[in-house]
Image 1 (spheres, rainbow, N blue to C red):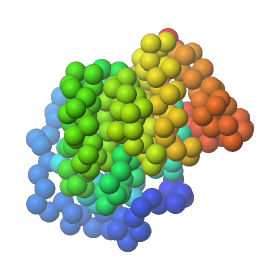
Image 2 (cartoon, rainbow, N blue to C red):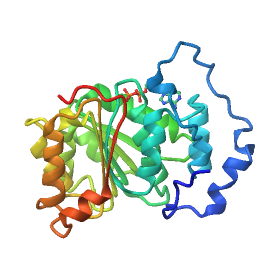
Image 3 (cartoon, protein in one colour):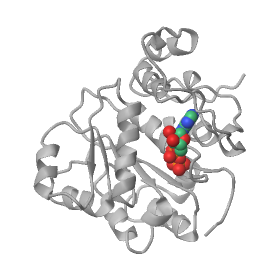
Image 4 (tube, rainbow, N blue to C red):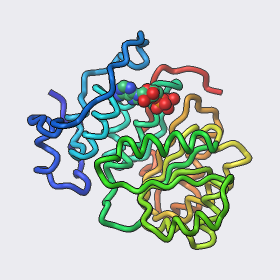
Length: 273
Ligand code: ADP
């Protein structure tokens, strides 16, 4: 039997998490969607057999996962979620359609303390459409947790965002330019946000966005967790990794420590871009 969860459990006490694996009373009254019977490829079926119930997730989060119709973690979820829950930085690559979104949304939601009126996860994506999709996944999976999700992209007025941010927001999803604007104006407070995720990291680290990402990171606490997900990892992502962990944002980290702390995951290896 494997024991991948030797790290500190996050906000909850063990008794809160543990019954989920042995007791399925949390499923009572929940209705999963109809089973998806379409043929699946190995990208989503070749798992090692880890169950969501074995991941020490909060019961309310398991309820959202169950209601979303996710019976078992996909390979990228199985690999990344335990590592993400250990608060390690992640560089994960897997093809599109293999469940990357939930692979970072689940550990991000798990780390949120809903009683705290602070942004606690920043999920960055390159497009408005992806921002809307990602926030939808957060809402579905976080439905029973009472998580407040805000999505912001360049398309709406800044005033609306300012008003929304005067209320509780636990998860902020959006495109980098608008979020930098809000952080720079002191409207979005990221000073206690421990989770920084980049989806489609290859695009977010293109020359157009990379400087914005670096500026954004400076608004987060020094010990924040960085998770990069992408279908391809061109060299630009590796370069960012180096500049991120040895550069001005975390001057107190040594290269050795930074590299040791980072976990690279690569599934269904494809183009290196
Ligand atoms: P990616 O981000 O890798 O492109 P998505 O996160 O969009 O992939 O997931 C692709 C599809 O698979 C979505 O419809 C999502 O709801 C579904 N999905 C994700 N994880 C699981 C799972 N563990 N079990 C069943 N379906 C899943």
